[in-house]
Image 1 (spheres, rainbow, N blue to C red):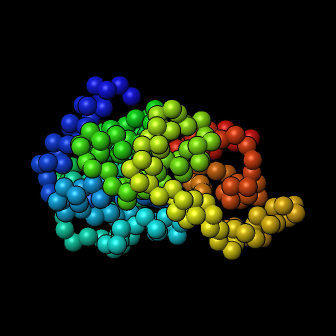
Image 2: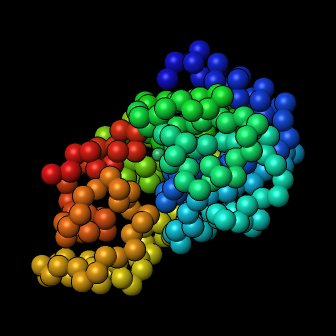
Length: 267
Ligand SMILES: [Mn+2]
């Protein structure tokens, strides 16, 4: 992304952050690694600036991402913060509707800052930083924090690494750009705990998922749909057995992820 565009967005958001005190951060329904990682990094950054900030989401945090959730926790609808937010950061969400029930708790007079990399983004914010060339919203948030001269701590770096590693499919999707790899390298320099990420996000399987994988190896159809919300947006995929395997990440095929469309190249 061109330096002038980065500067323009950086300055615009920076001046909003300076002007206001109370912030709410949210992401799309069935939050994924990019949405949650981006939220958590921005949360730590705003707190380091002395802001009042909370995260509120439509859907529960999948177990695999719990390890990056700050000790203060996140609100899951209908739980919602008492403080009225002046500014709402909507992260990784192409439309307002994709925020789900969180739309209900956004104060009418709140300014929305829309930060996203989906090609389908509807520019619904008062400020919109939509960068389709970035591999993940986490890459945009990292660029923003660097523009704002935030000292990137190991907690922020870990959250942003989760965002990038999950949205690039562990650096295998077509959005694994040189910039994505540079961002990942920078985050490890800043203390991203990548071994902890691998353990939590990729090497800890739920029992139903293990059963499903075992069944797939022996050519047996899955008996019931596993809870694999974290792996794909089911609304983007069709129905049927193949899809259920696919949700579990079992199918081997080249994946395209342009703006989060991770099943674009499915056979
Ligand atoms: Mn994303």
